[in-house]
Length: 255
Image 1 (cartoon, one colour):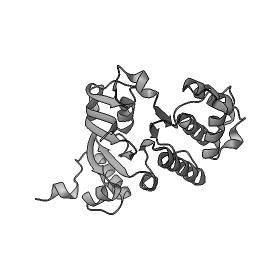
Image 2 (spheres, helix red, strand yellow):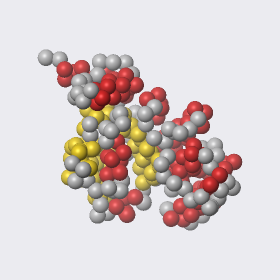
Image 3 (tube, one colour):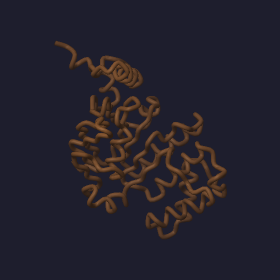
Image 4 (cartoon, helix red, strand yellow):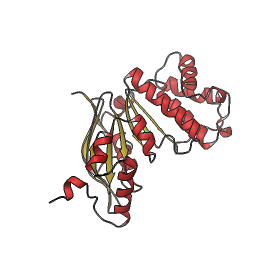
């Protein structure tokens, strides 16, 4: 099986506290994977290591056949990344920002790709808006448009719809799912919206206290914990973390 992303034994500590503690992850081409867990589980730190933005204390990462960090530039040519906390230039119009990034991605004729991206996510009306005029939700959507201009082989999204109104979030989810289906894009997404994950992803990986505690199809993971929904799994993990207890999937807690 061809893996778009492979990580083994990832660890990362900050001020003596391990945020990520031995994470292994493999994602095959075309998979749509949700990386889930309560706040403090290590999701964003794991994502940043997978993107080569921070270096793991131990472990290895390979993206699109390129070892990080040595071959990060080559790997990132086929990756798109968006997160609500990433800024956009405020003194440029949206079309100018997108055209600039399209050229950085190596797109020779940016205009058609910029227009297609705006249409895909229903934000053509923002084409001539200044960055300073955008709401936080609008900046988030434009960031997703930017990340998908070059039709990446791997699309990584960190809480992509957290600041969006429900109707806009649904439009964004539909656009992402359609792109992945039509273009064979591999997706790795974090989200606190379990309904969103169930609609977009075909596999979920749950983290708790920096470790992988469940990995499988959405229905399989819920069944492993002896409950019905991913939201219930999330709540159980969050409750265990608050009490500083290890998570106990049903299959591991039986004698």
